[in-house]
Image 1 (cartoon, rainbow, N blue to C red):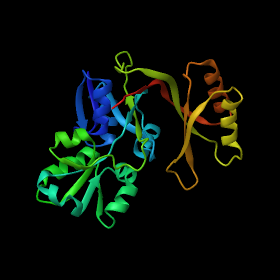
Image 2 (image 1 turned 180 degrees about the vertical axis):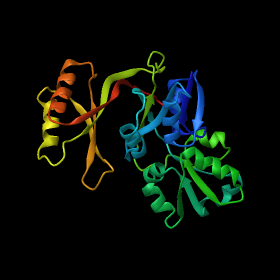
Image 3 (image 1 turned 90 degrees about the horizontal axis):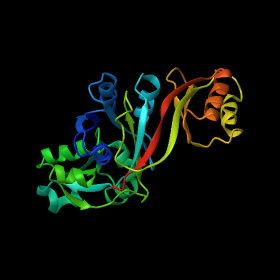
Image 4 (image 1 turned 180 degrees about the horizontal axis):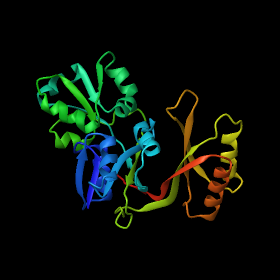
Length: 283
């Protein structure tokens, strides 16, 4: 099997794939849209992309592609603990506290905001497509006194030295990664699952007071637990949104089916992204 993931090698997405699918062929893509395109066109059997971080919230690019594009269903989610480290090229080790630039993914920079503000106030922060891309760039420019924020695997892969460990602002730093695939028969992560859930996208009827209340009531009176609700712009004008909802039950549950039928009868549009198990990894 072939698994596409947000690369380059040694990203947190790569770690998620290695933990969940140790025997697959891993293929790195530069961007999240490239991962979506690869699985949509069946260049790979599955695509694994970041979906939500405990500190910084949803990965908006992933959410928007799930809503606006036609994609395979979500077949699983993998939750990975995130540890961010500051690393430099060995040639710059003695001057690491004088770095002129710090590179990383925007979420990683935000996760380490307090540390960066206290220790490197005024230093230029540069956004990269991934934490591993930042580490790779630093490794390729030994003459520049700059640092990357990335994981331990990236430091090992790109021969960088970690100068400060665990610089994220809060201890509970985890990221959800989702697995997209046309066929679910072989999507069996080698991890222990916790529970099954369903993710839907809901678009409300325009200009009707109480629509969101009615949607939530359809789940509430049936005692269906929702673990997340989030709004995102429809990109059709100010004040126009769709809602992403996580349901802690399978789509096949009759109560869930009835709730969705009720929502649709209210004039809402519902897009199901799939029912899937949640898996946790310890590293």
